[in-house]
Image (tube, rainbow, N blue to C red; front, side, top):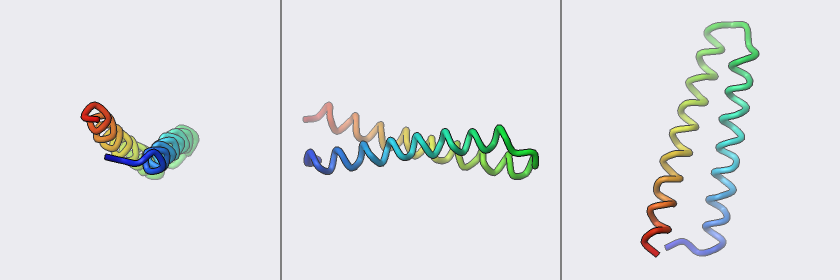
Length: 65
C-alpha cells in the first residue's frame, strides 16, 4: 500500500509522462525529416505504454484498499 506522499509522487510522475507524450507528438507532427518523425512517434508510443502500465497498477492497488 502506498502512503499519501508516495501516491502524490506517482501522480506527479504520471502527469510528467503525459506531458512528455504530448510534447513528443507535437515534435513528430512538426518535424520534416521522416526518420526523426518516426523516432518521435516511437518515443511517444513507449511513454504512453509506460503511462498506461503504471496507471493500471495504481488503479488495481486502489481497488484493493
